Image (cartoon, rainbow, N blue to C red):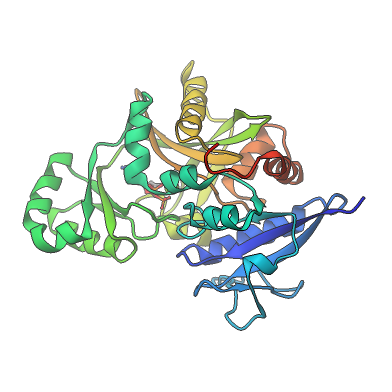
Length: 345
Ligand SMILES: Nc1ncnc2c1ncn2[C@@H]1O[C@H](COP(=O)(O)OP(=O)(O)O)[C@@H](O)[C@H]1O
Ligand SMILES: [Mg+2]
């Protein structure tokens, strides 16, 4: 039987371009080649679709991150010879529904959430009220538009004091902690807001939650969302929070699984994870991130295309749940192949 041709899409236009390359490299090295024929497809930072050669380097080299070169032979979605796409893309133009919409338009099946779930999951200002409507707790906070910031800076700075101290300031649609700051002094707030606006035209200001960071990986098997064992992010060294360096560059984070929690809390977080997944009508996979304060479970965010290298949280949590990296990739492709293309489903 001919093998299913799976286009592994790497790079993308977002600030998470490099991380996507590393994730895609993981998928390329682990995909079951007895049943699938992977084809590497690149999207450059400028948004061009390209076909890198098979030996194209997608690994991290010291502190140098891989990228998709603008000089590779160009292609378009309509010219691809694949049965399905696996968009190992993070952030805007990958994880936010735009890529998914392009696939729907072109009639090509793809791994993961559809247009609406991807878009909503990407935008924290939309995901939070939906989570709340489904009974989940979120960090108190406010959303600011750049157009308002430009004319009403003083009012916004004054309003933000309602959310206490310290505050977190972050772009509504970023990822990998890019553009995110913890603000401990009132006079640093303006700078933090301007910094977040370098990444997005919409910014979230939130109370800083004091608690443990706990993550849960969700996959959908036969249409049912399943929660993995939980993992706790332990940050060692000099990081105020789970920032970009801590995530990818300096080995300062550790994932602890299983997580020791009071009786019933593990199940409650797993329940909250599948509730969040279903609330946004996600498909395929998502990683749902929480804070546990000792008394309260607060959902922080959902990632519809989480980091996906063999050592990323998502595959590690499923490893702990008895599903290895290669099998996980197979399950996601199987779910995608049976998913009808239809944005109105
Ligand atoms: N309200 C908050 N309280 C405490 N820590 C936060 C808060 N918001 C963000 N953080 C910290 O910043 C990190 C990145 O923020 P997050 O909302 O997860 O954005 P991203 O999509 O970039 O991962 C979190 O993992 C956490 O360490
Ligand atoms: Mg996060």
